[in-house]
Length: 259
Image 1 (cartoon, rainbow, N blue to C red):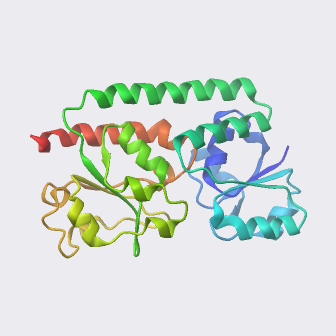
Image 2 (image 1 turned 90 degrees about the vertical axis):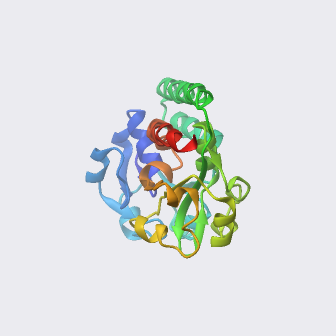
């Protein structure tokens, strides 16, 4: 089987299932695992090298979300089989792993992986129950316009013992449904601010200097941090494999400011 991966999550899943030999080309943004960075690059998130993809004669092209619908359309017009996943939740991530794993004839490996991930989720709930206080969290996916976190990030925050101040908007399917105003963030007064911008570095100092933000608890206590998009913005295993541990450490460290 020959597979082209337009986004990162399918790459990591195939490696975890020991089916990396099927991968012919990957996204230019792929970072997990490190070995995948050596594979041929065929796509960005919003554009792809269609001629290069077709030249591999893939059995399947894998992508994610409505943002890649035009790439999918162009590839389908060239006779390619394309699967665009569109999940938004942790449950959706687990279901996607199962579908992909069964597709590549890795049933046993898939079930084992799902068991490991569910065990991480269960243990995270226990750790969260031991926290004395739950920090209010603002997670920013983009700065201009300001875009709040997607659903699986919201669920991850609460799984680890935090309170997502933008929980309601996180359920929006489209990015524009998660647009935020500065006034909203000031009013909700988060204890921790995470910047996690896809494709560019987060300017932490600029966040601290935003007009009117000086009285936000997170700013006053120096609780503004950058998170890695390849971990938190990937709709695959990464948020569960590593994201849980990272958030747990931040929330544990924050407890001293809650007294």
